[in-house]
Image (tube, rainbow, N blue to C red; front, side, top):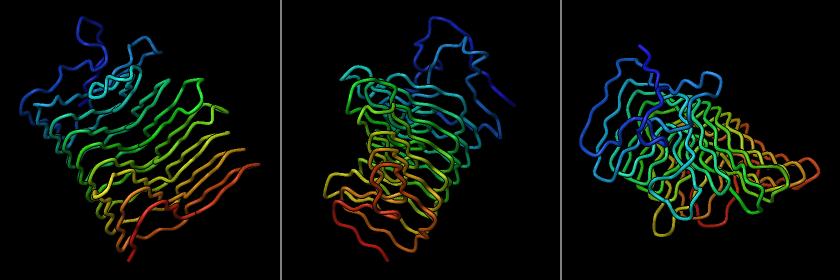
Length: 284
């Protein structure tokens, strides 16, 4: 079953479905909720928004084609964008679902192509693939982050796959593209999850790793098991750092397979193919 969300009307255009403000369970049983562009005639909007009082359980559902141009949890400064598939400001439990082909785009700062979670979140047995975050502005110092997932609230990701996602910034704006897989700004545990074939692309700027940690101390990013593999940080005539991991806080990695990651910068500077460190980390 496919549910196409493409009808114009008076509802809030930035999340076409009603915001979730109470407790709700969506068991799609394999269904897809999709924004159908039909030749770009449909307004751009995210698929789901969980408000501060909302509590969503999402299972066996595909979320596809969402396009975020705003960030409801962080309205200031204006112009931020987050969560093309879902933006969670409340509580979110996602299991056995898929987030495919969603986008977050901003002329200021964009994050969370598939999932953005400033609330409390849990993601398990879920595929987050082929999502995109784009900084489309012309000013210097913009950024795009979290191609698959971005979280400003506590999050656990278990037995999932984050693959083929991208973060991109406009050429020669000295902007930063980072964390094409996941960017964390709050306590996060990633367990038995594969992060692979994601790409950070920043021509003339800074490209950083697929798994990036920006959690303030004493918070910590913990990665247990799984793999971080075949990811790329690419910054032609710019700086590329850490194709696999980039750490600006406290990080623990245990029993993680890290392989095949690349940091490339034609006519620029590339360093830290597997990892880039600015703070404390432990690996076992």
